[in-house]
Image (cartoon, rainbow, N blue to C red):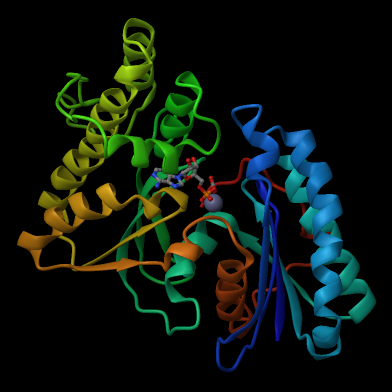
Length: 325
Ligand code: KG4
Ligand code: ZN
């Protein structure tokens, strides 16, 4: 079995995965959303303190499996430095005390393997990763061959929902509240511009749309919020589909996946389904409970890494907040 730890942002999570069967034997996640909501976003020092308190509490429930562990896996990159270090420290302590190897996991790759929790991996595929920190299109050939073919130049997709929600005083995280509020509004009421629509570049940008939302919030009253939310969501998603459509002209999709916290957005899922239909491409999605940050996805990819002997030496395992894919 492998014990995996996730603490890259505001979720403290631990999982136990059986190597041979990929079965998830234990999984727990304590989310800090409520604690951060009052600040309208994640406060790193507060998150770090909450991890330091929650992770040992979860670990106490795993004592029966400790003698059976073959490795300990942990998200070490990317994320918030002060929160990554909480998971990394716990992983190192377990590695020393149980005399088992460490597996350092890239959080973004973990999201990709959220698709395969308790399942066999099917590759290759094209992946849209939409989270609070990232907006990327990734060509995934295998565990070791992943190439980012498009990314955001500024804000991420999820972040644009969080910031829009903050402007309307709707709390954190913004994604689910905006999606819900958008259902009550008219998506054609505000004519926001699709970012980079004139640019041939396959890249994303959300800072301009954020500013347009800011002006609309300022001009309209609270009764206008559902309309703003609906119009914003429409354009935020249209930006993704427009760029993907362009990308598919050179690389038609056969198997396509959406992963990351924002992949829970049903409006986004529907628009991507429409986009894939003419290509007759298969759409892969993680179970809703595994879209946001969790240790089950870290455990799932760690099983693949274990098979490849992809261990990390104690002195090489460091929190690496800025690391890419
Ligand atoms: O993957 P995740 O849990 O954490 C990061 O690695 O960033 O993603 C969290 C992000 C937040 O920005 C949140 O607002 C967004 O995912 N999100 C959504 C939805 N649910 C979560 N964005 C849009 N629509 C949603 N339904
Ligand atoms: Zn994430």
